[in-house]
Image 1 (tube, helix red, strand yellow):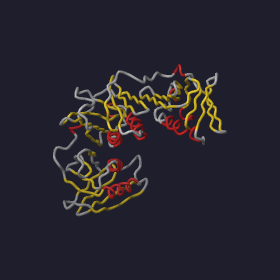
Image 2 (tube, rainbow, N blue to C red):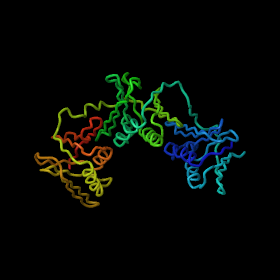
Image 3 (cartoon, one colour):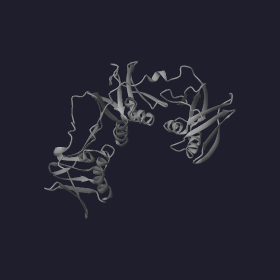
Image 4 (cartoon, rainbow, N blue to C red):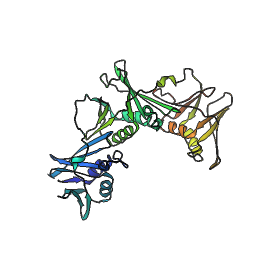
Length: 375
């Protein structure tokens, strides 16, 4: 195997695999990516058996072949090389030689025969979607995904679609039992992926993260998306990413949404975010509680952590009601506010420890529900 490729293209392709390759695995070859040179293209592949990625790049293939090498070490080598073009060669002993100007690296490889097969093409029906729509939905729900492996169905994002007025709507929902994030968007298409069969589509957290990274690097306006046989497939111009879906039923999230509207406090987003971040300074893994006091025209914040210290702050708001004291996990508040982009946030509080709702003022397409704390 021998090929020449532009350094920036090669580095970008390798970087896409770093979140997929397994750091701790009983199969050492899963630490590797697969390089396959064929027909003036270099294919860069990676898998952890749950997520698979195949990227194709035009290059100058001198001799076809394939090999697997450590993804992280290859990335570090190419990152540190200075030059426009890289020359890659595999020798008879499965060693890979990387040359650029006067810099030369040698890295041992493992034959590709033992690498798990990643199918590049299947009989999938793909639907066109603006990449920024999917990216925003995932960005606004990722933070609330549960890490509790005992509740496997919550360790991913629920994806639903529904046709309304000749156009398909996408909903994404995530929850860890203490908070819930809900986002929706109009695809603008009358032909799209349908989940009307009632079968949940739950994308695992790692899959959501890798799809988001892929979309961050995608320069084209549109992507393609398809679901079949327990797999979600996302295609860009150069890359195919496949993620195994979680097999399970997602809880009825609609039961958590308060039926009655609470007291709404309108707050400037930046003021709230910075106040909450200041409370985060004294939080820790053991304690991240905070008391918020709503009184005439102001919100007061107080967090006392015996191991770290105390923080107090106050901001002006549009509120004329009775004084209210509510406890929150300050990290949950920060996560919710950070993904909002509106100038003002409607902070909806309820009586008797019922859930609080945060949403951007005037935006009905996203909200986050947070359960108060007893402090």
